[in-house]
Image 1 (cartoon, rainbow over the protein chains, first blue to last red):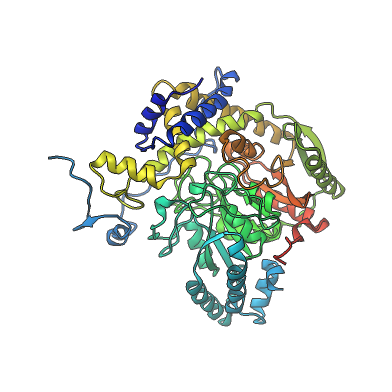
Image 2 (cartoon, rainbow over the protein chains, first blue to last red; image 1 turned 180 degrees about the vertical axis):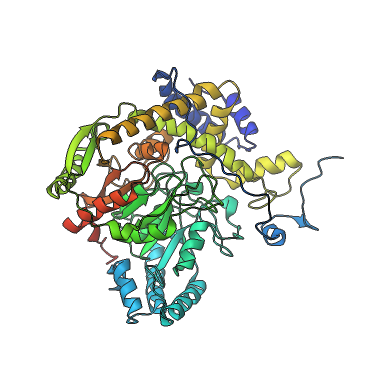
Amino acid sequence: MSLTRQDVEKIAHLARLSITDREMPVYVSSLSSIVEFVNELARVETANVEPMAHPLAGQRQRLRPDAFTDSDHHEKYQRNAPQVQAGLYLVPRVIE
Amino acid sequence: MLHDLSIGALADRLAARELSSVELTRHFLARIERLNPGLNAVITVTAENALADAARADARLAAGERGALLGIPLIHKDIFCTDGVRTSCGSRMLDNFIAPYDATVVAKLKSAGVVMLGKANMDEFAMGSSNETSFYGPVRNPWDTTKVPGGSSGGSAAASAARLAPFTTGTDTGGSIRQPAALTGITGVKPTYGRVSRYGMIAFASSLDQAGVLAQSAADAAAVLKVMAGFDPKDSTSVDAPVPDYPALLNASLKGLKIGLLREFFDGLEPRNAQLIRDALAVLTSLGAETVEVSLPHLPMSVPTYYVVAPAECSSNLSRFDGVRYGYRCENPKDLTDLYERSRGEGFGAEVKRRIMTGTYVLSAGYFDAYYLKAQRVRRLITDEFRAAFDQVDLLAGPTTPTPAFPIGAKMDDPVTMYLNDIYTIGANLAGLPGVSAPCGFVDGLPVGLQLIGPHFAEAKLLGAAHQFQLATDWHTQRPRGYE
């Protein structure tokens, strides 16, 4: 099965990735060959096989007491932000 | 020379005060300065911090403190967050990112008294098998600088092989420690999933990622793993089990050890590589191990399984890079969607975008069952076959890679061919198993690796077998010319 340019444009938008016109043909062809490659999985008989999401069987998510374990680092963390004002992250206006 | 000494020998000299950590650190910083320009293995050198760390280690040593890694230098893969030091993950996206905290692996090694010399180059976000996808350019293999060192821990592997540090850290999602270790002639250990904390290790595929070590020998790797491993409440999949004293267990006899030869790993293997693996197994049998042939019929499906599961998890993990809280932001975004799409489109390289889109596709409505759930079912079949094999044998053995190092540029235009390079390593990640690659010879002057895979938490047995092999052989002591 091969993907069309429209398919790749839709996937790119779902993934919030801008893809340039120059890049697009390469992705159409390489994603098509990857999809074709992973289609091999269809040949494997998997009726009654439970999907496996995690490599260690029987491990359960732990809970911890709802208590403070760390101090406030927001200033340090926000030093990596492209634009910050008064402790808030700035983005282009969303609501007019 | 100092860089020829094992971690144990260095620690002895530091403990005897015949050598200071500052001297040792200067020695390796000088090697980095002289040799790294030809390799591009190290992308951030933290000389000033290193000398300060070394002086602190010397003070601890002077006060009578002793430790296997106290005062020993290392280089961290740039996927581990290092407080106050750029942590780029090999990406333009994080080119300006100064980590605000230490990964647990970094913190544990720091409190053991290691000295960080710098950060190692890597495939962007650990996605690659040749270290060619890095924003900072390819790493060169010290055995032949026209060849790749493997990936994604290619900078770590090249740095260890060129003795720019006594050891380096790495991560292994589909072979990213074992494959570059094999291609650069060093020893690489990928522990059991959950054995080493993933906290502060930038996530690629959370059900597969595991941190480990690239070192000169299994004995050195054992000393490092003992410090790195252990339960961490900050990692929800960390396993709460005691850490064995790996160095103390290296000398267990191999008498009666049953090693399964993975038949599927020899199908189509280049004959000279296959012969080196058979020779290595003959060494192990001469030490008392027994070998039997084992078949895992679904193992060849591990590559397509991985290239559904890993991109799916990557597309989810990398959604955090949005140009808002950290990382690259595009110029003059016209609205929020444009900000997201262009920051990500411009900040990520070609392979990372390819994997995000593959993952987005296999998780999207209409394809989820056919690809993602299907791959998870095949993952279980593969895992069950490993489990059944370990009912019969103690360890499994085979090659680490299908070929020695290939030329830079050879596979970059064809992602599927590049992906098939991981054919022997991915199975262990899917099943969460520990694996070791140890050097076992050369083909046309390029190193070849023997891979050993064990059941969950069998690191001691794996390291022991690799150590016994290294006592009987000298492949791991060979040096690339120009890096003696």
